[in-house]
Amino acid sequence: MTHGVTIAGTGSYLPEKILTNDDLSKFVETSDEWIVTRTGIKERRIAAEGESTSHLGSKAAEKALEQAGMAAEELDLIIVATITPDTLTPATACYVQQQLGATKAVAFDISAACSGFLYAMKIAKRMIESGAFENALIIGAEKLSAFVNWEDRTTCVLFGDGAGAAILRASEEGEGRILATDIGTDGKQTHLLNIPGGGSACPITIDNAGKGLATLAMLGKEVFKHAVTRMKNSANLVIERAGLQPDDIAVVIPHQANLRIIDAIASRLAVPNDRVFVNLHKYGNTSAAAIAIALDEAHREGKMKRGDKIVMVAFGAGLTWAAAAIEW
Image (cartoon, rainbow, N blue to C red; front, top):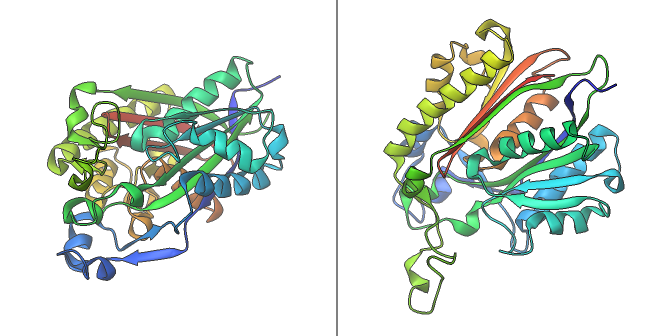
């Protein structure tokens, strides 16, 4: 008999190359103090030439499979959450399936920006609960360095590359489980954070190739306001659905975008800062990968033990938001 869906293993992968704030100040008008004061970011990772989103995702997946004690051939489902796919088609998940040798897995991508990993978690959880699949590999992976305008100091200082993964399967008696999930979208705010070029609405042509249209554009102050409100509401919803109180929560893993947003969320959820996991200073904003990487790091650093209650909450372009409450 199953008792819901559990996280059987986690994994993450960060490229070797580190780009510090001081490095950035050599080619764009900024400084370590300016970036740290406004964002909390000290450095970020940059994928090597020839290292694509699928490569990052596959390396994170291998670690998650190892921890779960599973072989890739056993996987039923692979969902990759990304806004920086290897190719427009086929899906990045297909490349991951090939690289892992997960020959029987159904594989597809979802695009929900920074909320993508938690979107994937909800989808995979429902599919396992329905009996359609016995297990799932969910991945948040991004090579944002390929979609950043390195001349725009308001955005290029924020983003980094990386990937995180988790194995989901039906939970047995005594195991932890995903208690509650929430996802949401406000399509009226698509203009606040986007990559305007490169799709069918604005193909890249010889005439516009030099205009940086296939790079991230953001209205930061507006995004901040929406982020705090939506993340607070979404987190409170899953806390309530799971029957929890703030004191019950051992760890909060928020999206790693900006330390000011993280601090604002912590205070609004009435959770002390020492229970909020932060790795933003090391990696910057890795979009769909951020919560996945943070979950793996928190797990491997021993931040949660069996039975602990964890809340994850994210916000991204779309606008999208998502949250999950988990019993570890």
